[in-house]
Image 1: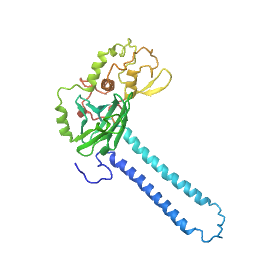
Image 2: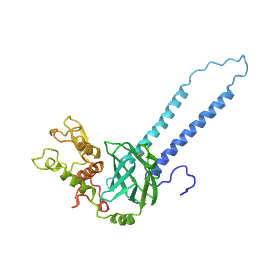
Image 3: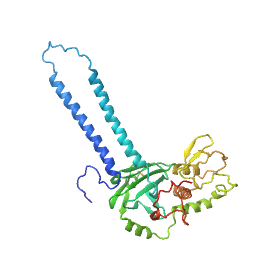
Length: 332
Ligand code: CUA
């Protein structure tokens, strides 16, 4: 559909105006200095041109005032880029605790989505208006990049790790979704739509899914199927760390380092268990590399996360609609 000329894509997320404001600031500062320098060159070239063959220029003494001015002013301007940029960067990288979770798997050449309560989609993602949505993303093969221009959201999805990003849609509608990293022959076809619905319509849409299983409960099945529970258990027979309440907490490793148990750490601990061995445990866990598909890994991550929820529902994870309070902050 033709939209007419736009300098930038429309703004449809809460972060979009902030990204654009910063972007305009960078453009304005760049244009100002480009013009200032260009006109100064012209002006000085004319004013101080050589007027006769015999003319000799005067010696020029330095000027401390000028030196300080043209060092300090650019420093202040450059720091303003830094602080403004950092504040936007932090906002983009810190999903709110009450975000709805969606797992995303990129593969040649499609985007696969799965909602927390199990609803699956391909190359199309339905989200509610005005609610933060957190994407937990992994790649099955090569590097892809999840890009929604109208949301100003772009995040590379690398094989072997978990990337997260989030957004809050501020306008209903359908928005283009792209893969923004060349990933093979059909890279240009790895596109889709992000559909922002009002919350009531979204609930209706979500409820229309045919008997799908929640991410966390699919994860708990995998957990049992691979007999993870024979070692990861809360009692004294445990040969692996207890996973209850683990997510989001710092973990002390054998080599003395401390890491936070986030999505990437949990995924890594499943496929390469000895990469970050927890202090006090033997390196006895086998690798599950190649045994569990990327989607399964994200389900296991969702399951481990659900073990840290304040009040797990019988299905293992609190359905998104009922989530209201931040979950990870409950003091124990
Ligand atoms: Cu996936 Cu380009």
